[in-house]
Length: 370
Ligand code: GLV
Ligand code: GLV
Image (cartoon, rainbow, N blue to C red; front, side, top):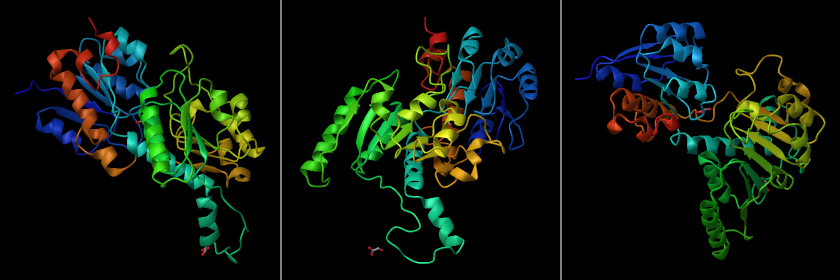
C-alpha cells in the first residue's frame, strides 16, 4: 500500500491519471483547457503536493521549487522539450524532473515530413482553389505549380531522436541528406542510412545513389539544401556552449537558396520570426512551414499572418505530437501520458533503488549522481 501521494496536474492528460488514482494517489487537475496562472501553481505546490504534472505552457523555476521546499519531490513534464523548466534551479533544489522523450519521436518526425510536402506542393492553396470554386480549368502550369520533394536535398538541423527519425522518412523519398548538429553527431546511424541508400540503388528501387553526410557548419548544411528541417532543443545563451536561440536569423536565412523551404517543428524561438517574415516577403526563400512560435498561441498581430505571404507560409498550432496514441496512450512505451505518469511514479515510489540518476525518464540526472 502506498502512502497517499498528492499530485497536481496543470492540465488533464486523460486516462493515465486514473492509473495514479487507482494506486490511491490523490490527484487534482486544473479543469480549464488553458494553462493555470503561475500563482496558482505556486499555491498548489506550497500546499504540500508531492508531485507536479506540467506541460510546456507552465514556467517552472526557483519560485515554484522554493514553494515546494521539503515537500515537492518531482516535476513530471508532459513533453520531450523542457525549456519551460529552469534546469539550474531544479538542480539547486535537487528536484528531479522527467520528460516524455521517445514516444513522440515518430509522430513529430512524420508531421515535419508532412509539413514539408504541404508547403512545397501547395496543398493549402490548391485546396482553396477547389473549395472556393476558383478551379476554372486543368492547365500545365496555371495558376501555380509546386515543388517536388522526391530526389531533393534536405538539411537536417539537429540529429537527436527526432532528427534521426526524419532522416529515416526522407530515405523513402530518395532524398540526399545533409546533417548538422551543433552538439551531437551520430556517425554510426548516418553510416547505416548510407548502406540503406546504397542498397535501394543497387536493387533498382532508387534511380540515383543517394547520399547522407554530416557537415560541420550550419552554412555547409543550409547553402545547398532544398529543404531545411529543424530538430534542435531550445537552448538560450548561457544554457549551453552551443545555444540554439535564433539559430535561424537574417544571416542564416540569407544563406538558404531562394528556392528552399524551412520547416520548424522544434521550438519557436530557434527562428527569428521577424527575419523569417521578411525572408518570405522579400523572397529570400521559397516558403516555410511552422508548428511552433516565439509566442504561443500565435498572437493576432504576428507578422507571419501577413496575407502577402499566406501562400508560402503554413502555420500549425504546435500539433506535431498530436496523434491519439502519442498523446494519450497509458502505455509508457507508446504515449506521452503513460510515460509522464510512469516518470512521476518512479520518483515517488522510489523505483530504481530510489536513485533519480538511474531512472530512465529523469532528465536532470546530473543533480543526483554520487
Ligand atoms: C512538444 O513540443 C514536446 O516537447 O513534447
Ligand atoms: C494527370 O492527371 C495525368 O493524367 O497526367
